[in-house]
Image (cartoon, rainbow, N blue to C red; front, top):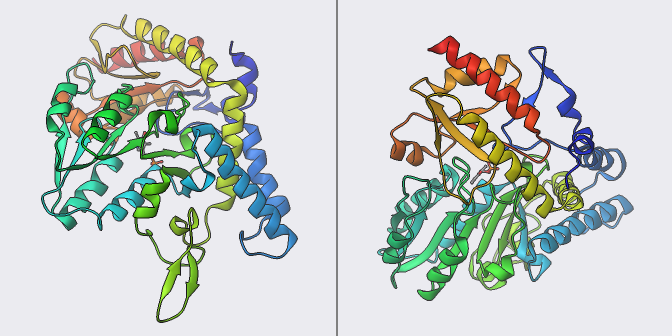
Amino acid sequence: MINVDKIRADFPILKRTVHGKPLVYFDNAATSQTPQVVIDAIVDYYSNYNANIHRGVHTLSQEATDKYEQARIKIQHHFNAKEAYEIILTAGTTDSINRVAAGFASLLNTGDEIIVSALEHHSNIVPWQMLCEKTGTILKVIPMLEDGSLNMEAYHNLLNDKTKLVFCNHVSNALGTVNPIEVIINAAHKVNAAVLIDGAQATPHIKPDVQALNVDFYVASAHKLCGPTGVGMLYGKQEWLEKLPPYQGGGEMIATVTFEKTTYAGLPHKFEAGTPNICGGIAFGAAIDYLNSIGFDEIAAYENELLAYGTQELLKIEGLKIYGTTKDKTAVISFNVNDIHPYDIGSILDKLGIAVRTGHHCAQPIMDFYKIPGTIRASFSFYNTKEEIDVLVAGLKRAVMMLS
Ligand SMILES: *Cc1c(COP(=O)(O)O)cnc(C)c1O
């Protein structure tokens, strides 16, 4: 059982006020808040052992290297990767996807097909479109259904022996839909296509096991997992990481350099050119420790309670429509009230200290599907409470009254 009062005390930001009102933070799907232990890890790094990592003979460099590589091992264990070197530390989900897409540019040919889902974040669409322009590869789309799930029958029909790669999010950031990634992965493997799963929105709620999933690539961002911005991970199966060419050239990623020929370093360094976000990587590890100290089963159970309560209370508001109504959802509620513009409601809620996100949530194709400009999205975390949901519902009623 979650002790929410105790948990809230771990997050300094939750004590602040906004426009004189206690902060109600319901924008967790955009970024999560940071607990004191993670802030402490950042302060400790810069206060006590800030140094560049790898190849340093001095003590500070060795301490920083040890802590950074320990963080990689924490991430490896958390995702149950077989090897630590299958975890590449990146700048985040977007960066991870771009690294894989750039690598595939040399593996794909004109007429090859790759498949995307209709539920993707722009960061899992645009890099692939850029790849298609370069290689003449054809992009196919798994359509979505009215409830915010994927049309799986259509997916099975899209797969064929020209399919080289399938990419899909584990959880939709705009709607909260949990996608049947096991089915997606297994079906893709039957035609020998690789699969990349965007876990940015799933990882705050679900602890994925990359070996059990048998996924080829899995990517995530630390800042949605109570960690800092500007750092994330790319899990890749060893065989795939070896097949892909390096993403960037520079220091750290080489074995030997002469002007005639450079040989590349082994994994993971081949994909980590230059000085990485050392402090961010270490803080990412601290964030994973923190979440595991609470427990993902406990987090999921409590957030499901918030989702059920929030859904029930919001639906009491006349004219409110929820987008994304599948049974298997994370604690994201995307909605509109009558035809009031989401931005107008969001602005009034802000004056009441309530942070929600409004707009297309970097998923314009979903908004086009529903023929709406955007939604209001309230996304809950394990540090939110039912009382805060009551504040949102009261605020919404007030906003609707003012705008109708
Ligand atoms: C947030 C998010 C991204 C982008 O993550 P960045 O940290 O901005 O790179 C991609 N996909 C999904 C599903 C997301 O929720």
